[in-house]
Length: 68
Image (tube, rainbow, N blue to C red; front, side, top):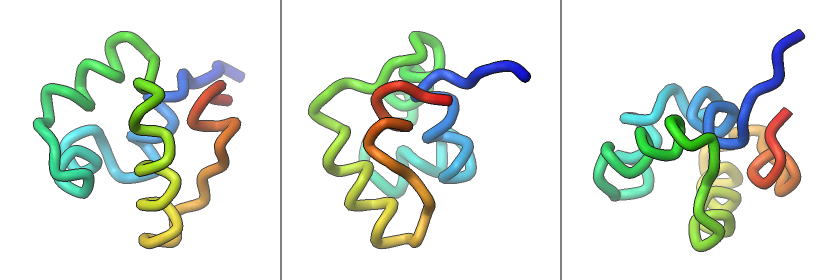
């Protein structure tokens, strides 16, 4: 089974990089860049986890940092 990068996993859980960017209130080019590098900048970890709780999206800190 192929593994997903942290960025690919998080974007998929939120319905894609464009939707995630809209929910975070940031440019879609930023979340798209995450999918290209596979990494999520550390400063976005806590906001992502808070957003996941708010929208009842299953997401753990280790998934944000390490992927699957």
